[in-house]
Length: 231
Ligand code: URA
Image (cartoon, rainbow, N blue to C red; front, side, top):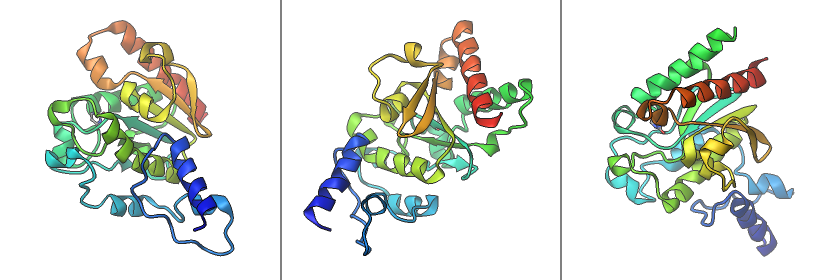
Protein backbone atom coordinates (compact mmCIF):
# COMPACT_ATOMS: atom_id res chain seq x y z
CA UNK A 1 0.00 0.00 0.00
CA UNK A 2 1.21 3.50 -0.78
CA UNK A 3 1.17 6.18 1.96
CA UNK A 4 -1.80 7.83 0.18
CA UNK A 5 -3.73 4.56 0.24
CA UNK A 6 -2.92 4.07 3.93
CA UNK A 7 -4.16 7.62 4.60
CA UNK A 8 -7.42 6.82 2.73
CA UNK A 9 -7.78 3.56 4.62
CA UNK A 10 -7.38 5.26 8.01
CA UNK A 11 -9.66 8.12 6.98
CA UNK A 12 -12.34 5.63 6.00
CA UNK A 13 -12.35 4.11 9.50
CA UNK A 14 -12.00 7.52 11.17
CA UNK A 15 -15.13 8.66 9.30
CA UNK A 16 -16.90 5.68 10.78
CA UNK A 17 -15.83 6.88 14.23
CA UNK A 18 -13.03 4.36 14.67
CA UNK A 19 -9.74 5.87 15.79
CA UNK A 20 -7.72 2.67 15.96
CA UNK A 21 -7.68 -0.05 13.35
CA UNK A 22 -6.81 -3.44 14.75
CA UNK A 23 -6.97 -5.44 11.61
CA UNK A 24 -4.19 -5.83 9.12
CA UNK A 25 -4.82 -3.96 5.87
CA UNK A 26 -6.08 -6.23 3.10
CA UNK A 27 -3.36 -7.18 0.64
CA UNK A 28 -3.21 -4.84 -2.35
CA UNK A 29 -4.73 -6.17 -5.54
CA UNK A 30 -3.61 -4.61 -8.82
CA UNK A 31 -5.12 -2.73 -10.55
CA UNK A 32 -6.30 -0.96 -7.43
CA UNK A 33 -9.48 1.09 -7.45
CA UNK A 34 -9.41 2.97 -4.13
CA UNK A 35 -12.70 1.87 -2.53
CA UNK A 36 -12.54 -1.92 -2.86
CA UNK A 37 -9.13 -1.80 -1.26
CA UNK A 38 -10.38 0.23 1.68
CA UNK A 39 -13.41 -1.95 2.43
CA UNK A 40 -12.31 -5.46 3.44
CA UNK A 41 -12.72 -7.44 0.26
CA UNK A 42 -15.16 -10.30 -0.07
CA UNK A 43 -16.27 -9.87 3.52
CA UNK A 44 -18.75 -12.40 4.83
CA UNK A 45 -20.27 -12.90 8.24
CA UNK A 46 -18.27 -16.11 8.55
CA UNK A 47 -15.04 -14.22 7.86
CA UNK A 48 -15.94 -11.49 10.35
CA UNK A 49 -16.65 -14.13 13.01
CA UNK A 50 -13.32 -15.78 12.22
CA UNK A 51 -11.54 -12.45 12.56
CA UNK A 52 -13.11 -11.95 15.99
CA UNK A 53 -11.76 -15.38 16.94
CA UNK A 54 -11.28 -15.95 20.66
CA UNK A 55 -11.13 -12.19 21.07
CA UNK A 56 -8.90 -10.65 23.73
CA UNK A 57 -8.84 -7.14 22.28
CA UNK A 58 -10.50 -5.55 25.31
CA UNK A 59 -11.18 -6.22 28.99
CA UNK A 60 -14.68 -7.60 28.31
CA UNK A 61 -13.09 -10.93 27.40
CA UNK A 62 -12.18 -11.46 31.06
CA UNK A 63 -15.71 -12.08 32.28
CA UNK A 64 -17.43 -13.52 29.25
CA UNK A 65 -18.49 -17.09 28.68
CA UNK A 66 -19.51 -16.86 25.04
CA UNK A 67 -18.99 -14.31 22.33
CA UNK A 68 -22.40 -13.23 21.03
CA UNK A 69 -21.83 -12.46 17.37
CA UNK A 70 -25.39 -12.09 16.07
CA UNK A 71 -28.17 -14.31 14.78
CA UNK A 72 -30.99 -14.46 12.30
CA UNK A 73 -31.44 -14.10 8.58
CA UNK A 74 -28.08 -13.08 7.15
CA UNK A 75 -29.71 -11.59 4.05
CA UNK A 76 -32.41 -9.74 5.94
CA UNK A 77 -33.45 -6.28 4.77
CA UNK A 78 -33.72 -5.36 8.45
CA UNK A 79 -31.07 -5.48 11.20
CA UNK A 80 -31.66 -4.71 14.89
CA UNK A 81 -28.69 -3.47 16.89
CA UNK A 82 -28.71 -3.70 20.68
CA UNK A 83 -26.12 -2.77 23.28
CA UNK A 84 -24.40 -5.93 24.43
CA UNK A 85 -25.13 -9.42 25.77
CA UNK A 86 -26.68 -9.95 29.19
CA UNK A 87 -26.37 -13.05 31.36
CA UNK A 88 -28.66 -15.28 29.26
CA UNK A 89 -27.02 -14.24 26.01
CA UNK A 90 -23.55 -14.80 27.49
CA UNK A 91 -24.57 -18.30 28.51
CA UNK A 92 -26.18 -19.25 25.19
CA UNK A 93 -24.01 -17.27 22.76
CA UNK A 94 -27.12 -15.79 21.13
CA UNK A 95 -28.44 -12.22 21.16
CA UNK A 96 -31.65 -11.17 22.89
CA UNK A 97 -32.68 -14.50 24.38
CA UNK A 98 -33.45 -13.23 27.91
CA UNK A 99 -36.42 -11.18 29.10
CA UNK A 100 -35.53 -8.19 26.93
CA UNK A 101 -35.20 -10.58 24.01
CA UNK A 102 -38.63 -12.04 24.63
CA UNK A 103 -40.06 -8.55 24.62
CA UNK A 104 -38.18 -7.74 21.41
CA UNK A 105 -39.63 -10.87 19.77
CA UNK A 106 -43.12 -9.82 20.80
CA UNK A 107 -42.55 -6.28 19.60
CA UNK A 108 -41.44 -7.49 16.19
CA UNK A 109 -43.95 -10.29 15.69
CA UNK A 110 -47.01 -8.63 17.24
CA UNK A 111 -46.49 -5.33 15.44
CA UNK A 112 -45.97 -7.16 12.15
CA UNK A 113 -49.06 -9.33 12.66
CA UNK A 114 -51.20 -6.30 13.53
CA UNK A 115 -50.00 -4.52 10.42
CA UNK A 116 -50.62 -7.52 8.18
CA UNK A 117 -46.91 -8.11 7.55
CA UNK A 118 -45.92 -11.78 7.62
CA UNK A 119 -42.74 -11.49 9.66
CA UNK A 120 -41.11 -13.65 12.31
CA UNK A 121 -38.14 -12.75 14.45
CA UNK A 122 -36.08 -15.33 12.57
CA UNK A 123 -36.61 -13.29 9.37
CA UNK A 124 -34.52 -10.39 10.68
CA UNK A 125 -30.90 -10.20 11.81
CA UNK A 126 -30.08 -9.19 15.39
CA UNK A 127 -26.71 -8.21 16.82
CA UNK A 128 -25.11 -5.91 19.37
CA UNK A 129 -22.52 -3.16 19.58
CA UNK A 130 -20.26 -5.21 21.87
CA UNK A 131 -20.08 -8.95 21.51
CA UNK A 132 -19.10 -9.80 25.10
CA UNK A 133 -21.14 -9.26 28.24
CA UNK A 134 -20.03 -6.23 30.26
CA UNK A 135 -19.61 -7.07 33.97
CA UNK A 136 -22.82 -6.50 35.98
CA UNK A 137 -24.43 -5.50 32.69
CA UNK A 138 -22.80 -2.08 32.89
CA UNK A 139 -22.86 0.17 29.83
CA UNK A 140 -19.99 -0.59 27.44
CA UNK A 141 -17.13 1.91 27.70
CA UNK A 142 -16.06 4.05 24.73
CA UNK A 143 -12.88 2.04 24.01
CA UNK A 144 -14.83 -1.24 24.15
CA UNK A 145 -17.38 0.18 21.73
CA UNK A 146 -14.67 1.43 19.43
CA UNK A 147 -12.79 -1.87 19.35
CA UNK A 148 -15.91 -3.99 18.84
CA UNK A 149 -17.59 -1.38 16.65
CA UNK A 150 -15.43 -2.26 13.67
CA UNK A 151 -16.97 -5.74 13.66
CA UNK A 152 -20.48 -4.34 13.92
CA UNK A 153 -19.76 -2.00 11.00
CA UNK A 154 -18.45 -4.89 8.95
CA UNK A 155 -21.57 -6.93 9.75
CA UNK A 156 -23.76 -4.07 8.59
CA UNK A 157 -21.70 -3.46 5.45
CA UNK A 158 -21.90 -7.16 4.62
CA UNK A 159 -25.64 -7.56 5.18
CA UNK A 160 -26.42 -4.20 3.53
CA UNK A 161 -29.94 -4.03 4.98
CA UNK A 162 -32.64 -1.73 3.71
CA UNK A 163 -32.92 -0.32 7.25
CA UNK A 164 -31.34 -0.62 10.69
CA UNK A 165 -33.23 -0.41 13.96
CA UNK A 166 -31.13 1.02 16.75
CA UNK A 167 -32.26 -0.15 20.18
CA UNK A 168 -31.37 2.37 22.88
CA UNK A 169 -28.77 5.00 23.57
CA UNK A 170 -25.62 2.87 23.33
CA UNK A 171 -26.34 1.61 19.83
CA UNK A 172 -27.41 5.13 18.90
CA UNK A 173 -24.04 6.45 20.09
CA UNK A 174 -22.19 3.74 18.20
CA UNK A 175 -23.89 4.35 14.86
CA UNK A 176 -24.98 7.97 14.80
CA UNK A 177 -23.39 11.27 15.46
CA UNK A 178 -26.29 12.73 17.36
CA UNK A 179 -25.98 14.65 20.58
CA UNK A 180 -29.69 14.42 21.27
CA UNK A 181 -31.09 12.00 23.80
CA UNK A 182 -33.06 8.92 22.88
CA UNK A 183 -36.40 10.49 23.81
CA UNK A 184 -35.87 13.19 21.20
CA UNK A 185 -34.28 11.03 18.53
CA UNK A 186 -36.60 8.05 18.63
CA UNK A 187 -39.23 7.65 16.01
CA UNK A 188 -37.20 9.59 13.47
CA UNK A 189 -35.16 8.48 10.52
CA UNK A 190 -31.42 8.95 10.64
CA UNK A 191 -28.68 7.55 8.42
CA UNK A 192 -25.71 5.31 9.02
CA UNK A 193 -23.69 5.80 5.88
CA UNK A 194 -26.44 5.41 3.27
CA UNK A 195 -28.67 3.14 5.31
CA UNK A 196 -31.83 4.54 6.93
CA UNK A 197 -31.81 4.08 10.70
CA UNK A 198 -34.84 4.08 12.97
CA UNK A 199 -34.13 4.73 16.63
CA UNK A 200 -36.31 3.32 19.35
CA UNK A 201 -36.15 2.46 23.03
CA UNK A 202 -34.19 -0.55 24.19
CA UNK A 203 -36.56 -3.34 25.31
CA UNK A 204 -34.77 -3.47 28.72
CA UNK A 205 -35.76 0.14 29.24
CA UNK A 206 -39.35 -0.74 28.42
CA UNK A 207 -39.20 -3.61 30.92
CA UNK A 208 -37.66 -1.47 33.66
CA UNK A 209 -39.79 1.61 33.38
CA UNK A 210 -43.28 0.50 33.32
CA UNK A 211 -44.25 3.30 31.12
CA UNK A 212 -47.27 2.91 28.89
CA UNK A 213 -46.33 6.01 26.92
CA UNK A 214 -42.82 4.71 26.06
CA UNK A 215 -44.29 1.35 25.06
CA UNK A 216 -46.80 3.00 22.79
CA UNK A 217 -44.02 5.04 21.22
CA UNK A 218 -41.82 1.98 20.65
CA UNK A 219 -44.72 0.21 18.95
CA UNK A 220 -45.27 3.26 16.75
CA UNK A 221 -41.56 3.30 15.83
CA UNK A 222 -41.68 -0.36 14.83
CA UNK A 223 -44.80 0.18 12.79
CA UNK A 224 -43.09 2.95 10.79
CA UNK A 225 -39.99 0.81 10.39
CA UNK A 226 -41.77 -2.37 9.28
CA UNK A 227 -43.90 -0.55 6.71
CA UNK A 228 -40.79 1.15 5.30
CA UNK A 229 -38.93 -2.14 4.97
CA UNK A 230 -41.68 -4.54 3.95
CA UNK A 231 -44.37 -2.56 2.09
N1 URA B 1 -29.61 -6.48 25.65
C1 URA B 1 -28.88 -6.20 24.55
O1 URA B 1 -28.59 -5.04 24.26
N2 URA B 1 -28.51 -7.20 23.79
C2 URA B 1 -28.80 -8.46 24.03
O2 URA B 1 -28.39 -9.32 23.26
C3 URA B 1 -29.57 -8.73 25.19
C4 URA B 1 -29.96 -7.74 25.97
